[in-house]
Every structure is written in C-alpha cells, then in structure tokens.
Length: 322
Image 1 (cartoon, rainbow, N blue to C red):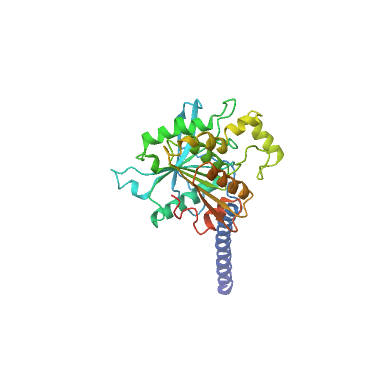
Image 2 (tube, rainbow, N blue to C red):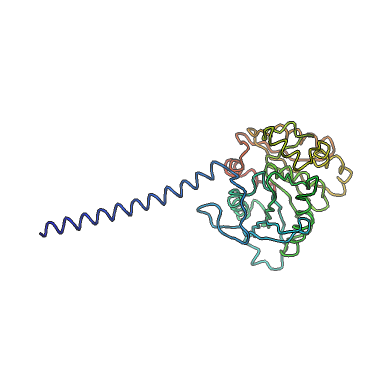
C-alpha cells in the first residue's frame, strides 16, 4: 500500500511538472512568434490607439502616448502619437526641439515603438539633442497631400491643425532651426514636399527611403499598376498635373527663391538595395542643380524596410542627422 501511495504521489508530481513546462514553452514560443512577426514586416496593419499607452512592440515598455484632437480641416477628430524626452519633466523652463515624423503608406503600426526607443537611445547617448517627437496619423496612401477633391486634406491637418495644437500643448521651440520634418517611404515623400513648401516652419528635412520622387507616378518601383491608378485617382483626382504640382520637385523649383531667406538642412538617407535608391540619388542631384545643398547618405545592404534602417545601418539615421 505504501508503495502504491508513493507511486501516485510521484505520478501526480510528474504530471504537474509537465504542465508547468508546457505553459512555459507556450509563453516563450508565443513571445517569439510575436517578435518574429515584427521582424518580418516593418509596417504591419494601420493601427490607432486613441488615448492608449499600451506597448505596441512585445517586450518594450511603451514610450509613446496616443492622443486625439479636433481638426478643423477634417471637420472631425484626428490622431497622433508623441514621444516625450526624459529631460522634459525635470527641465520645466526649457523649450525642446520638435520632430514631426511622417509614417509610410501602411501607417505607423509596429514601427512606432522601436522607432521611439531608437530616438530615446540616441538622445541618452548624446547622438542627438533631447527632443519631442510627434507621429501624425494619416490615411493609408494619402501621400501627405490634400486630395484634389479635398475629401482628405492631409497636409492641412498637419500644418493648420496639428502643429498649432502641439505648440499650444507642449513646451516646444518655435524656432525653425529646431523644427524637423522627417519620414520613411511615403513619409519621406511627404517630409520633402511639406518641408520645402513650408520652409518658414521647418529648418530641417530628413528623408528616409523616400518615394516617389519623380515628376509622375509612371516610375514607382514600390507600387503595382493597380495601386498607382488607385492613388492617382483617389488622391490626385486622376490628374498627372496635380500630382506634379504636389511633388517635392515642384515645391523645390517654385520655392527656390527662398533659399537665402530660409536656409534648410536637407538629409537624404537611402539603402543601396532599396528600390527607390536611384530616385533618391536623382532627387539629390536635382536639388543641387537648383541651389539646394543636401547631404546624401547611402547605406550598403539596406533594402526598403524600416527595420533594416533602424537596426542594421549602424545607427546611420542618428549620427549627425538631428
């Protein structure tokens, strides 16, 4: 009988141990699966988290806050996320530089938290000054342009509504020399066109893997024919001339007389394996031809993936850029 009772005890202990091991493996494999999911895609699906500070990247404490504000241009609510630098709480008499980072065609998604962590690390290690980083949210494939029918005035939301809201709510410098506009992919295109158009507001433009930068949508390596037609029709009203009038090239050409009045630092960062590499190189040369000095940073082995720019470029996005 004693032997039988001992056998039951050992059997129950073994089952309990196996159950605990199974639970541990499930949690580890689940965490790895979520991490792997981020590493395979820098965008993910467009995501909005109004008033939420939940971490969007497993294993990272959230550094961004999501907020909603009323947009007169949109006649309704719009959203943005914001990173507040570590020194903000202790430097109450200080106005901070501000960076407006425009997302790519799929929204901020899963790139937001890793990007915020990279900004924080660069600030804490002295690669850049402690700054507030604002992440506006726009419709997918809005191109950061006021649509021709004005159904979605993306540019106006940023310039007329969001920036005044940020200036009123946070302690930011309103000196254009401390105001940056930047972005990846479609966001790089948006940063270029908005930054060149409103040079009275922005002293610095940073383009990362920007596209498209030609005079038309004909040569858009990151989009198939169906997507090109959709963007041309929905954003530009099917008008090639309206596309050109909203392009960074048009803004650079028509505003070049302001070069001396509003000197602007322009940095173009692009991977050599990125499909938009040649467009960015050509745009850099175009700017030089029209009197715009710019810094062109070419990154070997980097493709059109924000993850690669952030984690495999030896922090090229942060060395002497901001």
